[in-house]
Length: 625
Image 1 (tube, rainbow, N blue to C red):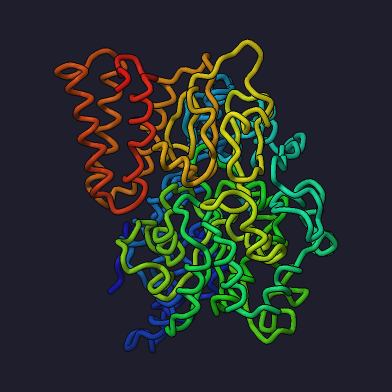
Image 2: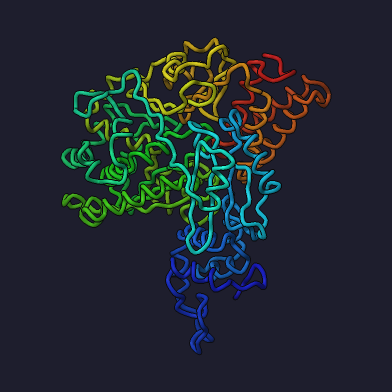
């Protein structure tokens, strides 16, 4: 049956973009010319369906070539992959970076999220509106612009992502940026290169490259050429993989258990336990996945690591593959990180060329390779099971757990999934040894942690510090607040985290201490707000973020995030329904339902920041409780 979303046909450009990735169609059933045989039998359907996991790359190919994905292109993709058109449309319409209607060949995505909102985002949007017209990307305009959630450039905001389609497509990020620079970039003029990131190894982070130093995740940042495998190896690169081969899979897992390494993505799952569960599962094949869809507002640590030390991530993911018995790994990268994509692609290819990926890695008798998969703008894809769905060619919607990824993960097979910081920390464990690594930090939080400092501090940037450092000490590492300003609040853990007040500057930054204080380290966000910040606007932006990013799969989150934002608008505008007390009671009820009944962490944490803001009295008429 030949099903279509419309009567449109794919253009020659769209067909060429799809065929360049999938190869030419082999029959009329697959979108090619019909033959006499095609009138009697259909063939190749199973092979086409087995390539559904290529749906996201195919949609990117069409978007990059034409600037949007037409109904005709969707029909052609559905035919090539033998997937119902409605499902193809459902996936394409899920992601923010895909356009289903014609728009400008060049689009400027302007961040107006938390950190950039504290800076010059409003001024930048106003200047672009004056130069280009109202927000939107009309097809008849050479350049259009759109507001965007966090672009992961919080250390150097304001930020713009340029999405350019055509014969020579390109994606670039510029931060910090002025309107004149953004317009120059849109018209392909020469613009200054981005500044080097502020990456500081603070208290407890080793300075040396030798085995005597402590954990040092940032040791190579700014010192190694991120495009050179030789430079990486000259600074200790691939010693971790060699050590892993010497120890064997069981030995590496023992070191991770001795190190008591907890995941750095927010859930704090013991890494050794996770890897052991996958390695010991008899079902084959196994997979390893790097979750590099770093979309939490205020977070940029993984971006810095991927841009400045990409070979370390390739090495660490190879170690994970070796230990868990996986021969294939996926690196799922958020679509707003074009520089990281370029450098990781270069690193993967260089490693493959030098025998560090492929059929016989290091001549050690095991095979492993990595596929880089670019996301397309969906915060929810950072949830591990939603990420699996995205890779498989489905909507990035979370799955119920159990079953857990260790037994039923990517493609339904045992899968170990870790974020970038966790994987690179494994290399430090192998360098130091598990017991020595556990000697840093605290009993329940070993090693060092990367903290993303942004907002009203003198030196925003990425800071590595030993667990146990206090919040006040960390802020002082970043130079403290600007002269004459006083602290109003600090957001810990990003939009899914919580606000703490000035009385919490003595809070030790560990998993156990923040948990006891009713907060979370989350993704390492430490966003500082001084007395000039409009906290009402900040909290409303968080509420809008969760409303927009909810995947809509479950009712508690889909409805709850909307009701939460509506109630906040009524409270802060001085027009509560039935009185402020009734509105606060409603917010409590909504928060409880979202936390208890949502499928995934988005809905479960969507009220955290709002509730903490109300407790601290950061909102008008939101009396401290």
